[in-house]
Length: 319
Image 1 (tube, one colour):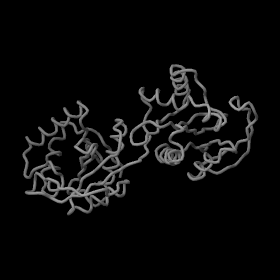
Image 2: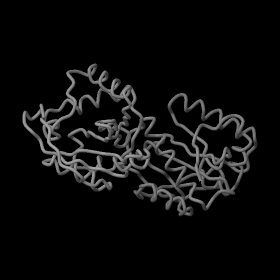
Image 3: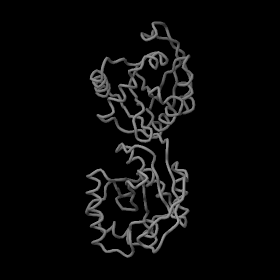
Image 4: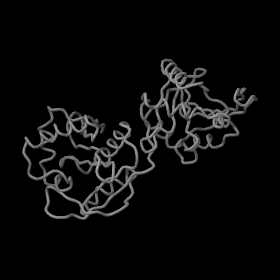
């Protein structure tokens, strides 16, 4: 079932009240008492909008066919960035908690919240631990939690997501770090090419013109911070993909994860998706083959960076 994830509008305050005013939800939520009133739910929704506007947190509703089936958000506590989520009692057992967790992780990264993400769940709620494990969290500690719907201290586990890779739409603040990654002669030499721009302004102009010509760009994020980009564009009547990782982040599997995410998020063109890798750049070839690309043709080109002919291999997936 397709889901949508967006801020809960005022028209859904009754559905939000129904979601929260459930003891099985409240005892695992931490900050939700039981029972609550509709007025309490409306006030909470308004306060959270204000906190979101101040950059303190963000909460969105999880929707199926326009029906609110859960909510999830990120916020900050003493140990840093944290997420929480909950699913309506009538919609549990269908994997929606995992979906909500995936959505809110992406939301935090799209908002460029950086660093590891933690989650705190009560020890008597192992289902939440399984959800977190599915989306990459590892249990990293124990704590004592509080629940507004229960009395006393409640043993809990802390789980942490670190080293996560995400793709996010290119934003203005990305240009400076991406230009710095591109402004690297050694990286250009190893790749056998790549656009060389004299300054950040020229780089911005290049990306703008490429996008206007049909190029699609995504910033590659590591724990929410830009570490490179991935893009697709038309070349010789074929749709090609390329990627660039800052040299200080090489060898961490980031490019492989970025390509996998791209293939998961962007439908393959009818004629397939193509890529190129210099023969003396086996790391790039491994990124492609690991993600299902197959080699189908050899080629050569003159590299201005190397001042010599470079042999390359063309790869394809789909089509």
